[in-house]
Amino acid sequence: MVAMLIDREQRVVAANEAARRYFDIDPAQLPASLIEVTLEGNLVSALRAGVPEGENDLVHHRRTVRSKLVPGPRPGETLMFLTDVTELRRLERVRQEFVANLVHELKTPITSLRLTGESLFREPPAKDRRWFAERLVREADLISAIIDNLRQLAELESGAPVYESSTFDVVELIEQLDVVVQPEASGLLLSVRDRGPGISPEHWQRIFERFYKVDRARPREAGGFGLGLAITKHLVQTLGATVSTQAAEEGGQVFTIMLPPHVLTDA
View 1 (cartoon, rainbow, N blue to C red):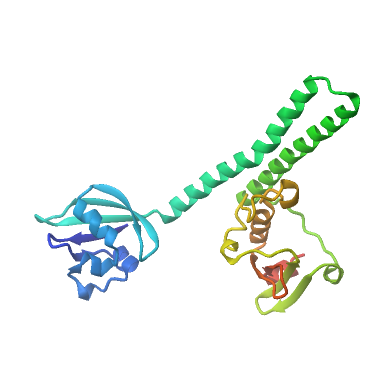
View 2: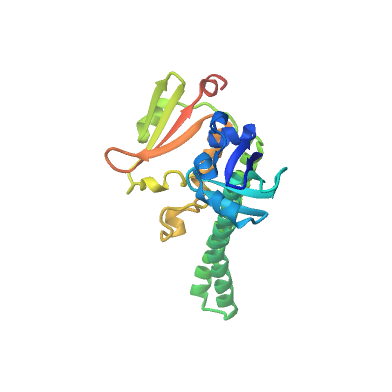
């Protein structure tokens, strides 16, 4: 936990080791003003407000901290304790987005199932009943596919072995797809290119998140559920490998997997 002792003039007179690492404080330069030490105006505002507990965004450090103020050992002094909650808040946002996206993905097929079922109650002509039945099966299959993908993700995240090792002819794979295999000192670089419209750079860091879609207007049948790349990322990680993406020089997108040597020798 980050701890700093601040005097009545809002100067940091002492900082523990965690604070020195977090804010890169040189103890020889103390005492110094809080803003000079941390470069964070929000902490100065929190100190002036005197609120015992709160949460602050650190603009310069791009972090989020929970703050606690208690009286110091001498009159006018304040002890400021900071706990970094950046990752906790990120996980909360991911969880909230996950629930919202899951509701969004399930709402459409469930609504379709209900409407189709209600249509069957009205005893449509025989030629229409088959169409309604096919629609029921199709929407049920979509829901089943979402559940199967979520189950696979859960198993991957739990560390359970959800794949079986097998061997195949890499040359044959390369010859029938836009696949490039390149030996590297750190392993084997496997790149797969698509010839679609490509993905804007601002999405590259998020497309491996579950349910994340670049274009939410695309039909589910065309764009999937936004789970395929999430499954790919977790599956790759279970192998000790990494996956990334970038734009292809001639259009489209390239997805690259760096396979470590043990994956290639343990098979």
